[in-house]
Length: 153
Image 1 (cartoon, one colour):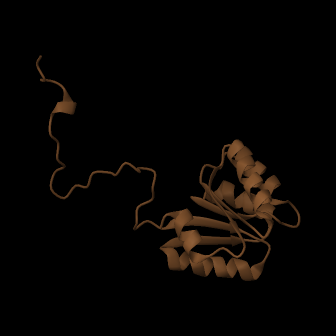
Image 2: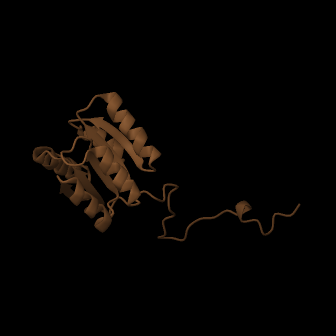
Image 3: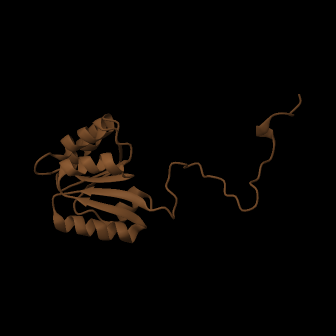
């Protein structure tokens, strides 16, 4: 049986200076800033999250305390990562996630809350059922190593 014409049988190497993409083609480049939207009604936590994200890598960080404005920002900027508190004053995190899914948000979602584990896990399952890509669900305060793991940075 002849092997001619079968690409799978031929050795392949990339030309000098060219890097072949890894299997994780949807992962952002190490050099490209990651666009992150953080939604929480606690101004102190927002600033802590900015510092943690900055320490984690070259990220463009947008902080938002109002869920309705955050939805507008999702539409405007489509961040790669959304970090969302579940307890918000005007629109709770579940309502926000439903609206984000309805808008077609395709990025990663990290849930944070002081609520008990079962509530956070249920919220994560609901978000996944809505088609959202939940990569973490953590009790506040979020620790640096948890953030790094969730962002894979």
